Length: 539
Image (cartoon, rainbow, N blue to C red; front, side):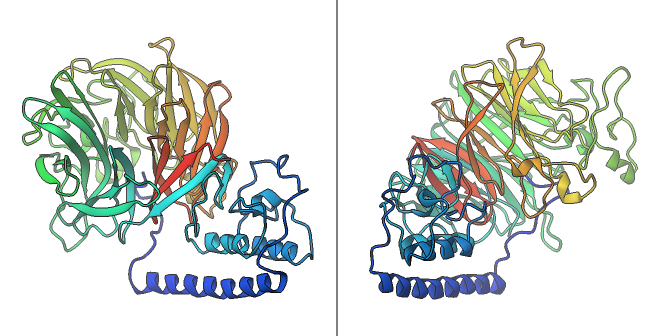
């Protein structure tokens, strides 16, 4: 996630935000009146697409891109109007029919303008691609749980949970949304946290221990460090969400004076439950220099207890920290100086080695160590993690390993490079972050088998944030990726050496943080706009 001095501007909340919303509404109202007048001149039914090459048209063209120029907006509306009035042909007819009724009329012309204005589709049409989608994917619903910025998304049963990022740090924690009827999601409430605290990562699961039985939610808390306010919380907060309409605050584990828990993973087995916490740069700044990975026994969620810590320096024997810390008077080993006989890792626009994220399958932990790549630990005994392997990104790349995730049932690990270097304009030829696919058939020697990047992530353009963020593996083996300005991407991983994109959806004004597979649906959290519910396989 965005941090370490690289946060993008957030959509403001307040009078300016309301003014923008009013402008959008006025633009859409004017467009609607014009389009209705045009439709009236021709009759309510627009020209039929019968005879158009709908079947042969590439689904790689985004829905709504009626003129096939790679963008969605007013020019597409004009192309539809020209076609409707008989003034011209449509370059991409299937991309123009946004309600899949075989006609092109004012209803289809309105959608590109809504999209351009940052608004969700005006309707959900089963089996039909929304504006901004390629391949086979369907818009189901959208809900925004109040003002502010959103973090990651999780789901359990009939509920979705969305973290809240640093704006505005007002005491609202993760949002709870009822998705029992996916077409009509309903925001229920926010979980409480201390003001000046951000709760961006969230995980929920059903557990049964001698101390607790029900739905347990864990969220990582970080101090927002807003001036003039009391310090926020830094640590692991646990909630009982067995009844999401009436959640109960349980225990808290503090990692202060560190900034907090950036990301986390939770698992349960054999009547016990554990949380794995990523506490960035704890090995540098913690008074005891405890490792960035903390393993917490949450079997009794009212009284969480740390059972282990693991650091890439102390336990891994490798470089950690950052050369930037020399500005604070910190030298070796905290400045990323490599121990004798070990590689140098810190490089690129954000030269650091720290634990950014952690995931687990209950037996192994997959740790993303930024410029040092990923490390796997055996956590069959959570109190005594054991090193298994280390996958290092190529020295010439920027590093920035954000996430590491095991593909269930296959000897593969997915890592994502959250590379923001084009924002800094330091290297004109540098590009945005990508997905890497690692073969761990030989557990001691991970090898990169393939990679995937979107067309825009292979550029250094700066009119968006075109880095990959979080990976997710669906039950059918498809890979879902959140890709900030490039939205949600769906991959076929049948051939790890040549992953194939099968669908994508770029929401209006996309800034997609998280993605989650849920009962045949895709849940996506957008930093600015909240929860998007999609259905893969629409045609």
